[in-house]
Length: 61
Image (cartoon, rainbow, N blue to C red):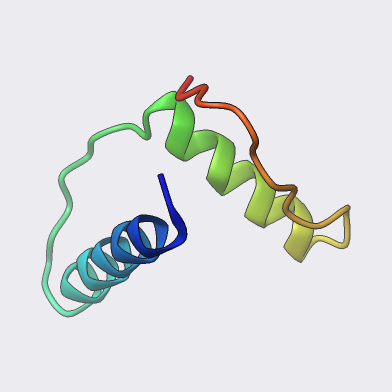
């Protein structure tokens, strides 16, 4: 994906989060492996670990 595509996906996720926060939405779906990797990286960065590293492969697992 190029930068513009990454930004569009991020914007979609932000809109979903906003919609979920303003409703009583609770799908209960578990995070897929790719999304869980992103969650783990952000949580680690917030806890003071190394920052988010650039992905250079197309591994969606």
